[in-house]
Image (cartoon, rainbow over all chains, first blue to last red; front, top):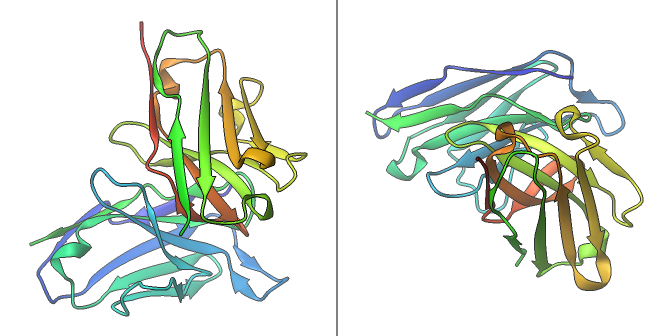
Length: 113
Length: 117
């Protein structure tokens, strides 16, 4: 199974500042069939189901603010939230969409400082 | 708009069984793989099972193989998860999710399964 490791477990960031979340996969998740990295990011707010934010490592879903940026390739990926807003307080999960079983990182809790 | 509504959760004793259902609407159900994903209280996300569009291919995480069965009824836009031999470790919110290229695109609100004596 591919192990997904997120860091940090939590971080507190001031409004308007930048939050950076890292995700590392135990295997390369680059999919040669479409030349894309099979890495997905989700946001989960308290009492709500997760919401798809970014797929293929860097493709923002429709309606996701541009301050959310996904980057990385191979085994190392980053979710950056620029100009942090109050509504961005949530837990963020990465997930490899490369092979079964699908596996998630442990989550990173973003709080407002 | 995609709408997924899970039902069937509740309190069950260890060793018991439960069947979860998911009613889908707002999209062409039989065009999509579907998944169940669970989240234990205060914990992270765990993928449980996938089923392909026609229901003839199923995939499970090792911890539920032989105990859980995913199925679907495309005529009624419904997804199911039959769970048996439940243990306390199966206690979680279970989400019904659309699956495109193993990307979990739309999520229901979830149904809580509590396994306790």
